[in-house]
Length: 358
Image (cartoon, rainbow, N blue to C red; front, top):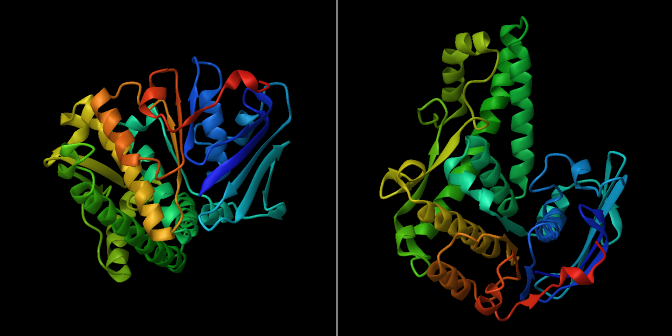
């Protein structure tokens, strides 16, 4: 899949802007504060239906305006055109695919695949558990679109259980919510287990030419209650029964996928604690390359890569190896203030932000 044309209206610092894009990708080289990140974020917004940096859509609109619009004209790998337009005005979001209004944002997931990488992705190794859950939930849903529906249903049940613990309830009422909770939890865990098996297999086999150390990287799944989950819904119901008194005391669900975590290990040691900054950076970048490869293999869609200043603190050897490995197999957009990247990526067209209205 490639993005051929991008049009923006009142998106962040862009009043009106239109970009014609190369199939191989583009370099966005400019000083800080010129809108490089905003440009890449607009592409991500077209592929995800939500911001990769802000929690609310209204934060994406240009200052002193009441609407914004992002429109991407794509071409899929079979040569068919696909137009995606997302607009926001006065608290309402409108999505159109091929100029036809649609209600489900999940429709984007089925057709457009984008991967956004930025320096903040170091939080995947060293940040709070929610950063890792958010990343893996998105990555899984790009390969298995039904996952996002299952996850939303699961989180709704978690909210209902939490409300239950704040008031008197009957045995029957709790059993009904617990049964739904256990069924959906096992579905979510199955998706996560399958994805981690693919990721760990890729770390071990595919990427030594980028960095030799990654063959010793493993990603572990860490249940919040420090015990492996039971294999059946019936056994999980027993676990919840044992937790009931504590859950009533804390008025929330104390076990489940909504509070679990992931851990990166290098040679059996926690990368967060024992890894160097360089090892953490290269691990995160390769994780994104694995994500891209899995999307292409399992969906048949080549994703679009968005690299926002990820080479800023990467040594030249690893940066060169990544460029050789990618080798334009995906359309890639790289934002950076570094002029020397034009030499590292000679096949990419440079976008001049001075030529657009901003």
